[in-house]
Length: 87
View 1 (cartoon, one colour):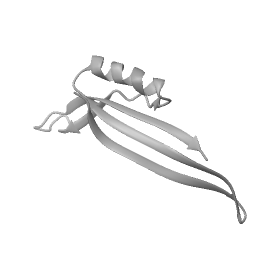
View 2 (cartoon, helix red, strand yellow):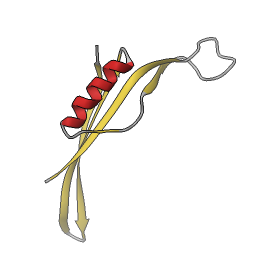
View 3 (cartoon, one colour):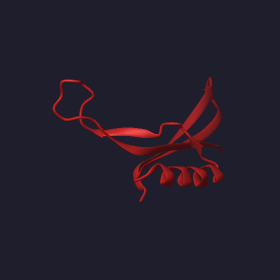
């Protein structure tokens, strides 16, 4: 089952001196998945709705990468998608 990690949007303006010449909004949505198959299915759905995949497929959610650490890293299937809408 996919779980939403984060949704974020940011409106940005492009200025030329005192004049605003462009305005656009960047949207980001990030998800955790239980399997690679679930991620790939959701990726197809997101891309068909105009989202771009960042390419990152796994994320470390706990633990440590240090070889001497007592708690090994725990990774989950991950997807980060973004799109830009010009106004």
